[in-house]
Length: 249
Image 1: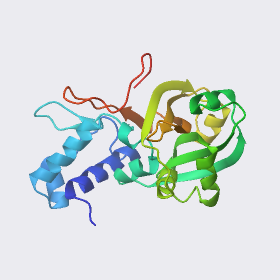
Image 2 (image 1 turned 90 degrees about the vertical axis):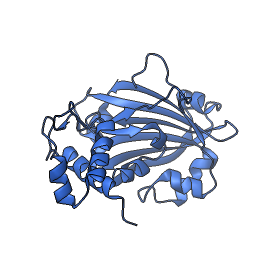
Image 3 (image 1 turned 120 degrees about the horizontal axis):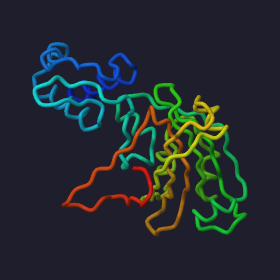
């Protein structure tokens, strides 16, 4: 099914911004120019620009043409469990390279997060996540053994782990997130194509089932020039995820 016109317009402008065809500071084509290009009325064009403005990609005062403010794509919290789903929603192409999948004893830190005894068998993955073939995030994920062993029968480079695990009846309905900044270690540097010590955005996540039992612990490290994070809240609704003090969000 074809995407709504405003999503197509926003996706095209988003891709131009990410590729540098519309660099930071550049003016966005006018509403009339976009309308002529897309054979669109003013409504879809304004809706597309409002979407990019809400994402922080463009800005500008009243009566002035919008300009590019940022090239970093923002990831809303509700899509954290599936990088692939988030990227597809942007109209972009997700990718992954699984570098390691192994069953091994849980170390002290992993055991604490998953509420296991140290040495309990777990399944760990190291995956490089790509956005339009560009390195975007390095994912270090640990599953409890009954969940992780399902992945030995799955091609982890074929798509979303979480969609597959859901299809196998795995319940990961609640997640807690901590966002902070870390320096790139040698593995991060090599795989994300950054200098050693370069700053990275890190998201640590513990996903639980509906009975509050931990299923997964992940340490995901993002290139901040490719991805940033957003939180939306309201006076009339409780935020869906907790923010911790002394963390960057």
